[in-house]
Image 1 (cartoon, rainbow, N blue to C red):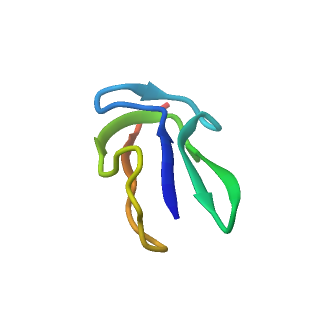
Image 2 (tube, rainbow, N blue to C red):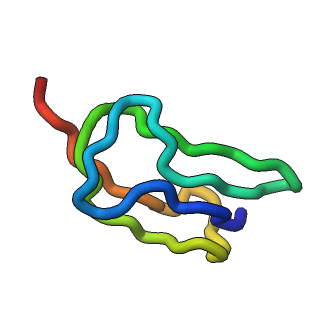
Length: 65
């Protein structure tokens, strides 16, 4: 798919369900959301980039409760 928008940056804290990356695949937009609260450690993609299936897009370190 193609990365349309990267909604987070490294160092940013995110909550569960927060949009991380918006992709276009098969002529449809897909919003990839955080599965947990945490801190974005790395963002591996940029807008306009084509990515393969199962590629790592964002790395999040889970915040302990």
